[in-house]
Length: 247
Image (cartoon, rainbow, N blue to C red; front, side, top):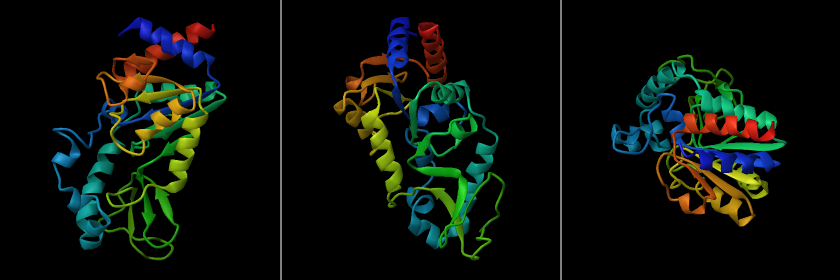
């Protein structure tokens, strides 16, 4: 790991009053979860049109729920890693801190983060297809769960292909990017929109950018500092350096 990059990034964070962090699949992979994209990703194993669209759910809700039940069971066995806990600590340390994630695993919340914007929903939440009821749990809800309030069907509270992302979440994410002093990209490829545009927005409003990723990405050219390491190792090293800088 490049100690100079760690030191430079720590100085930027120590001087910042507002920090926005954007996390992607790299965070989840290091806790043992599969990615969606890539040669061995989830979308190489199943047909998206059969598992992750509103049309698929209307055609065969039991089939769709079977796939999501399996993923929820796996998620119940996963724990946040130290990198997740570092970000929760940064929230407590920073006057204005926002965590924006593309991940649907809820691990940031389980690690203690409070100010989290989830662009793509939550796998550990089920919501009613008719009323406002939702429930957060990784318990098995059954083959075709129904709402206890209106008896309509429940569905996973994730954003499927063909569905719009929650408007409030997008708006709040861009507001956080525009007002931050430092924008940190962690474990994201920089190709999924609109999350990838947050870095451009932050840069346009004068923020300094830190990228944490073992490999160069589409957004590397925007970064002031690139830390070429895994999320967990980079975040823990950066946290130690930040503490040393302010001690």
